[in-house]
Length: 381
Image (cartoon, rainbow, N blue to C red):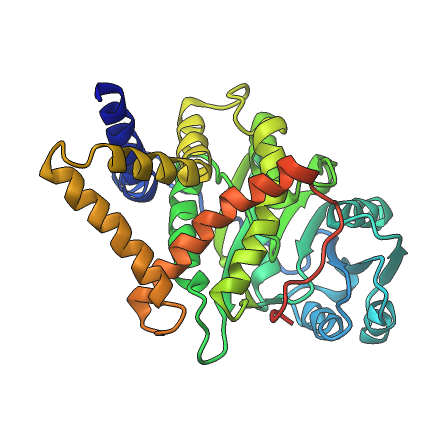
């Protein structure tokens, strides 16, 4: 029983640290740290560098026109901004809609996945371009977003910068992603201040063109870019003033499917892509990687170990009865969230399903690998 108790308490401690301890650590760490985030450089009018904005698109005919139009409204000289739409095997009218909306270059590629479409766009970018920015086809950027990204990249040691995403949802949405994402942005702002972020997002980010990395086509930029830039001696920052918005998956069940697909792309990065290798990390960044990424991706296994060990330990102390009751309460609340749209129940359902999506993504990857191809999540267009 001693071994089972060790498993129980260790699993519980790691789960608590992953969800509560790490945020508290970051909060205290940033308060005590003498390091302060350097203010982004102000790009003087008339001195803006040439920038290429890449929009990878697959079956995006309903939104690509608005995305290109939004790019044309950015606070950036029109003669120093190139908009490339990389159509990744789109079987619809995405390419036509992009041209009609005024994209500078539309690439019609065979369906090879988002990463390869982005690679092709970077290779085809105007030779004058020194910065390459990336966006999802359904995203909308605030007018000053590009200026905020480029301002961070003007710092000599910065190679990658991601912005802030606000998720919008229709009335009656059961997805709690917006709540989670605000928490995630808080974590990233502290990581960015102390060292570098451990993850990005596909809606809004930019890199120096000379630093662009071609990664395995199943390994998306969101997770693979930040740590790889750190290993190459560059910082990866979060710029909260670079703001974008996206339509949220309307249901938590849809969010489960989206995250399951995302995790099937994340697991190759974790298991064979070098994320967990400490080589090239500072001690501070290693703590962040193992806490924010390593532990978070271990939560399905930790929950399973906690539950099974708790069952075995029933009758060996009242504390084990209480902890099992609490675990069952969360599961019951998650089940009730499917029929009773109360916020606490929906949060419980979101937590259970998104935690399960991590394990489901691993199962998919181990069972049949991860295809490079992709498709827009239902309800986000």
